[in-house]
Image 1 (cartoon, rainbow, N blue to C red):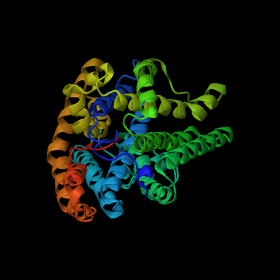
Image 2: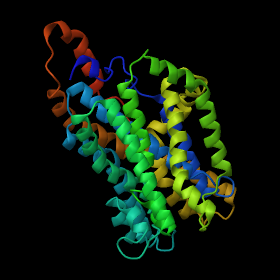
Image 3: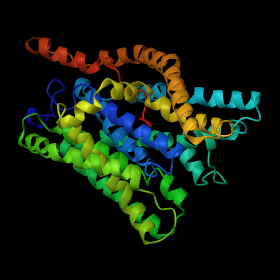
Image 4: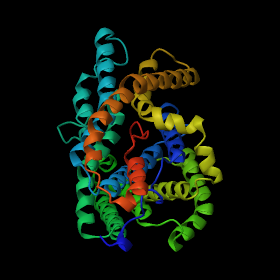
Length: 410
């Protein structure tokens, strides 16, 4: 493509480097989900952590795709899907195996009778099972939260193909606008389902009813890919980010404590389930975008602190997987709620750390070692005057920098 149509290069673009503030945001989001499940009365809106994760996942997965495309000129779909599977599946299978084993050995425990939920969880269809696509609706109990993983994996099957198709014919900024339009179509789809009287399980768990949240993050990533540092748009957005980040952050924090998702049909039910997820995704996108645009800003510095960023980078996936099973296991054993929550938090962190050190990181490194050489070999051959600078850029782009252990994943 002509030089003026190229997206910003990896050495100068907004998409370069790891965004540590986003790791910190991931920690806050998983904490919200944790307290939603363990202390619902105190944090009734903690489920919006899922909305933040969906938006963040769309943003991050699109950045990964665009980084590889910029660096190599293409996307290796087989490598892409293999790396997604290696990053997320082993920890999920380990969780399923432990729950089944403990339930078998201790039939009186809170993990007994969970075998029937393993298949929909491991096959990434728990969201469909929640609203009865395979027969009766199931709650999933200890594995119920895997519905979010199912939504994301189903999205990942389609989005890379659609994105590559758009980029074959359109510039990146045109693809960004098309992505926004597609998100609006899915909001309309949710409006039609709500007004048709579809049950809440269908509206809450559908891959189509959550697609606009993921697409919002995707559109933001494409915008940042197309935008150059120092451009008028970049400067305007960076200036807006100074006040947009605090406002979006305050709104989301307030929602954690004040927002209770409606579950009874009525005007508020219809309004919220039509526009609520989109509004939460937009707030999340404003916050994500502001953190990227203002990496030295006050909020970015807070979220980039190692005490927030490292758990978000390494432990958030495991914490999401393990927190509810641990809480349900302790529920009949620890009557006092404060003590139960504290023990759940401690055990969840320990199990997430064990998952990261013993399952996630070793298998991710093994997968990168096996899969990365194929990507590197396909990197474009560079001519003499350019190879010193550009080769360094491509090398940085393809280096196995630490990536999220998973989305709510990641």
